[in-house]
Amino acid sequence: MTFFDIILLSIGLAMDCLAVSVSTGIGCKQIHIGSAAKMPVLFGLFQGLMPLIGFFVTIWFADFIGTVSHWIALAILSVIGLKMIWEDIKGNEEEESCSHFSWATVILLAVATSIDALSTGIIFVSIPEQIVSATIIIGITSFLFSIIGLYLGYKIGKTAILRFGIIGGIILIGIGIKIVAEHYL
Image (tube, rainbow, N blue to C red):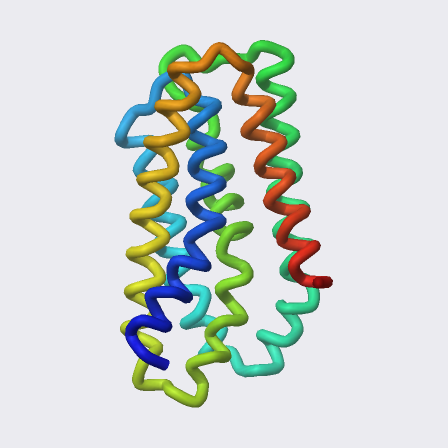
C-alpha cells in the first residue's frame, strides 16, 4: 500500500467525521473552543485507534464486527439524531453553548463514526510495517476534517433562519442509513 493509498483511505474514513461535525455545528448557536475541541480530538483518536485495534485483535474479530458494525452505527446516530430533532422541536436551547458537546454524546459519535475503521486494520495484517503511519495519518485526517466540519456547520447554522437542529438530526440518521445501505450494496 502506497502513501497515497493511505491518504485516500484516511479521507474516506474521515468523511463520516466531516458530515457528523457539520450537522452538529449546524445546530449550535455558539461554540466554545474548549467544549468543541472534544469532537475533533475524540474523532481523530477513535478513527486512528480503530484500525490499530482491528490489526491486533485478529481477522476473526474484524469479521464479527463487520457483520454488526453498520447496525451499531445506525442505532447510535439515530438516537443522537432524534435527540437533536426533539431538542429543536421543543425549543431547548442552551444558554451559551451547544449541548451536543457533552462527553457522552461526543464519545458515542466518535464510536459511531469509527466502527467501520476497525475492519480496515485487516488491510495491514500483510503489511505490518505500515500500521503505525497509517494510524497516525487516519487520526490526523479525521481530526482536521472534524474541525473543518464544525466550522462550516456553525457558519451555515448561524447565518440561516432554518431550524438546523432538525436538519442536523435528519443528516445523522441519514448517515446511519447510508452506512447500513453500503453494507448491503
